Amino acid sequence: MTVAGDGNILVAAQESGRAVIRKLDAADLGNELASYDLGDLAGGVISDMAVDASGAIYVAGLSYNPALSGGATVSAHS
Image (cartoon, rainbow, N blue to C red; front, top):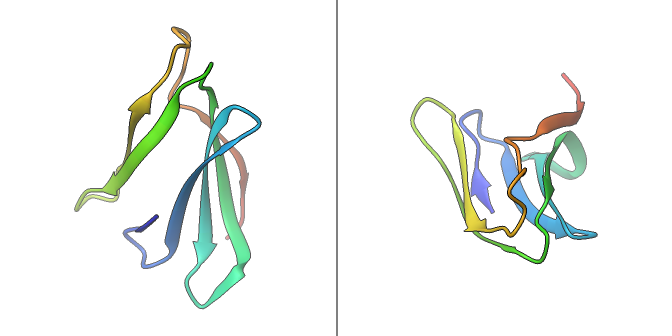
């Protein structure tokens, strides 16, 4: 878990073997602002996440999926 550039909360998780990042409203953690599916980890793990000064999100971990992509926005809300 880390704080996004806009002050909201980012949570990285494994869901059904997939790497997923969820962006939550800092004022109401029950309000999901966006969801990003990074792909199938194929038995791998997420070990860390960070956000740089420009707001770019970095996820560290291990994947046995050679086709793992940077992901796609599953849902985003303004």
